[in-house]
Structures are given as C-alpha cells and as structure tokens.
Image (cartoon, rainbow, N blue to C red; front, side, top):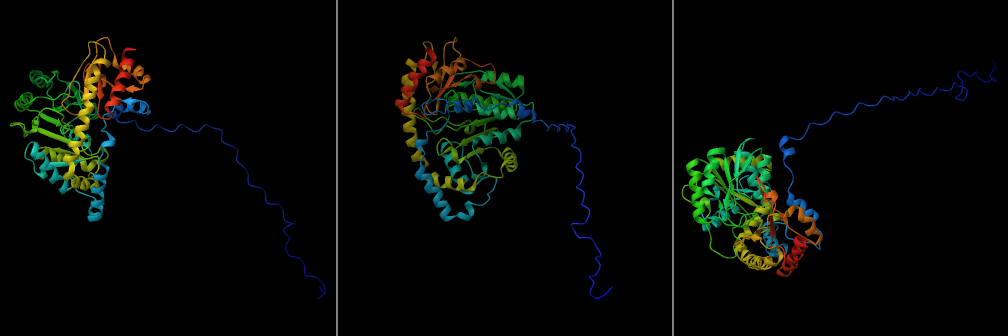
Length: 426
C-alpha cells in the first residue's frame, strides 16, 4: 500500500448495517381478568340504623317558597352575630396561642367554671370538675351509649321520643322499649313494671319542653320517677336542651337536683338553642366514674371539643342571659301565633299540646288521618311538617305530627297554617 492509497475500511457504515429487528409484540391476552374480591361489609349496627327522617324532609323542602315547620333549628336572624364575633376577636387578640392549640378532653377550665356557676343557680350545686364539655349534646348521648351499653342491653324511652336519641341507642345495638305515659310524661307505675320486666340499663328523658311533644313533666312526677330509679337501680339520662326557653309558667327543678337521684342521674345540656348550634358546644354532668368513662370515650372520638369555640363561649357567658331574654320574647310570640291559628288549620277533632316553652308542639289528628301519607299534599301547598311515626320506639301513632314554631314570623306562621289546612283537608 502506498502513501497515496486510502486506508481500508474496517467496519460498515450505519447505512450498510443490517436493520435491527423490531421487538416482538406479544399477542394480547384476551382472558377476562378475575373480578376483584368484595370489600368486607359494613358493621351490622351501621346497616341496621337508618338516617334521620327529619333531615330527609328538610332536604326535600329546602325550596325558599316552602314555609317549613319541620326543622328543629333556632331562628338564624336572632343569632347575636356581633356579640359572638366580639367574643372570638377578644380571644384571638388576647390568647391566640391557647385558643389555637390542643386542649384537655374534659374541656377548657374557663368554660367549665362559668357553666358550673350557671348550673348551680338553677339546680344542683356543681363544681367545674363535675362537667365534661362535649361537641354538642348529641355527642354526650353517644359517649354515654359507649360507656354504658352493650349490644342487646335495654333502654327505656318516652313515647314518643327524641328521634336522634333513638338513633344513638340503635347504633349502640340497644333494645328500646317505650314506657307508657300521659300528658305529664312517663307513668311511674308503668316505669316500675317495665324495669321489672325488661331489666334495663337506663331511662332516657327530655322532661322539659320535650322534643317532639313540647310537654313538661311536673315536679311531683319527676320526684316519683327519681324514687322508682333509686328503688329499682337504674340510670336516668336527663336531656335538657330547651330548658332556658320558657315563655310562661315557673321553673321546674331538674331530676338531677332531687334527693336520691344524685348518684344515678346524668344531666345533659347544650348551647345550640341559646347561643348558636354552629359552635357545637354541649355538656354532660355525671357521677365521677361514669364521667371518667365518657372522657375516655371522647378521647377516642375527637380528643377534645374545639378550643377556640370553648374560649369564645366562656367570654360570651357574660351577656348570654340578655340574649336569651330577647330570644324568649320573640319565640313566645311565635308560639302564640301558632296556637292561635291551629283551630282553623287542623281537622275537626284534632288535639294539640300547649307548650310553656321550647320549640315544638305536637298534634294528633282524627284516627282516619295518616300524616306521613298526607305530607306530599302539604308540600304541594308549600308547607312542611314532620310526621309523628318516626318518633316512636314502639307502635307508632300515624295520626300525629310535630310542628316547629320558632323559625317563622307570626305572619308567616299564619300563612303556613292556611296552607297546612289546605294540604290536610283539600
């Protein structure tokens, strides 16, 4: 090879190389994929307890043209927005680190102290340590069910009874037995017989302005109930969310304040109806062992009720009485407006309660009427109520209904009752 000759090529160029074969594409697997295994089912207690019929009715009747007597809500236009806002602003300005931090399960000391003083003026002398602050009084019911009830235990209730209590006890797996009563509430002789026959764990009562009936148990009847519970060995759960909303008549002592009832009565209360339900503040007063068990159950549920809300409520207690007085004046007028319009609205032969306070009254129509079946006709007239049947643990009375009078003006109540008359009789 001479210097003028080009050097021989030692490899082929890219163009001269053999093409790289494309990777083989596997044939698609057309075998159907196995169906995924189902997830485990819900707990039996969740499958066996339905939702609230009242909530379902409120969802259906939320149209603004409907005059709704179905709800159990306080009147929103009466909320003390300025006063509550000022309480929150003061707390955040003076104690932000505390207000935004975790708190104790039992509740903020300032709120417990103020609440204990408030309870002591109306009933049993109460120390702050005897109270557990809860996220609404509904949580207090759930904590009690956790602390007291085993599946299959028996709970005695009024007839009719507060619907959400039936839900709580049902979710706990309890058997609910209705105790017969009269216009004054549970009959003591019937209670004694039910205890002998059913061997229950507790009796649940709303003695003052009961939901749904609006009735109030007189003091002598309360004393008889307390005596039966002491003699037979029974917890009494006394729920009092409405007691400060009295329009006439005199204060009736709590069962929890009666001699012989101190070691077996749990008193529940709430700020929802007198301050604002959105704060979700309730309370429980109970003997020490049961209160501690409820505190442990609360630790597992939510650790504690919101600190900021508690501290703001503690500040607001200073002006709460004045606010409640304004609310009572308005609600009393609305109750009177409903009572005045019922004779023309309900069919002949109907009867109804005349509550001394609270938010509800209860009506019973003639036996031929079924208020659940008639509800769609009422809604067609742009008015709503709650049929009475869901409030019964035992055999329901289909001719009954509940009316809430606090969320409408007297003029709206009059118009709503005219519509109700057309829906029930038209």
